[in-house]
Image (cartoon, rainbow, N blue to C red; front, side, top):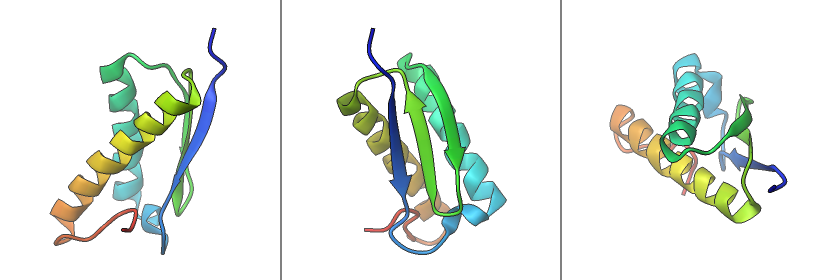
Length: 89
């Protein structure tokens, strides 16, 4: 059995997750990725500038999970905010 990994994705500047719609989208995207990939998402929570996930996978797979979360949510955000970046560049 793999020990769960806890990983965090933090915005480089500002507090983009204070917006309720942005926060809800990031959290629902995390759940959707876990469901689609068959990964057990043990916990996910958001603060004003970060999302933290505990996943029943090793650290390398958890980093892949975060990369996909970043890619999908950044693309969504850029589409809604004229090319802006949710997490920073």
